[in-house]
Length: 140
Image (tube, rainbow, N blue to C red; front, side, top):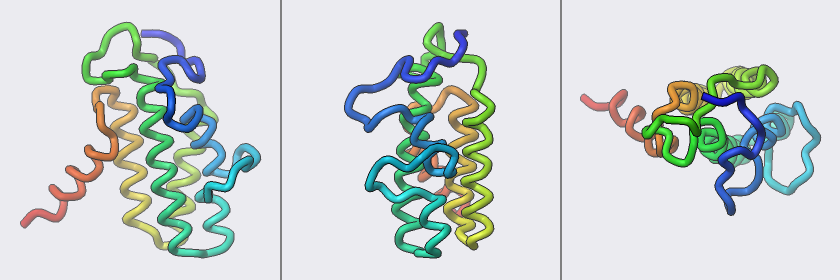
């Protein structure tokens, strides 16, 4: 296990550091792009923008999953880190709180489920994992 370093294990072409994108969504760093953030969408109370921003946040978590847990998290090994930066953990919790407060409980659940998968460290496809978990919750 290694200490987390931003961009270590970064996958080229996925839109920048997942950690920085996550913090941007929580309003902890200045928004420097055109992509909607969860924090900005909450301020405007725009349901469509909340959905778009949450999708981008989930994509950022997928990038961070590989930054933290390696290219193939399920393989384990020396690519994985054993600590998460405190400000990043706060950012995920804050974004989930904002979603819950706005009544976007399904989106908050998706964020919680994705975050727990990142922390578990053995999920390769974060969005696929969330979809499977959602399907299993609603299976009769």
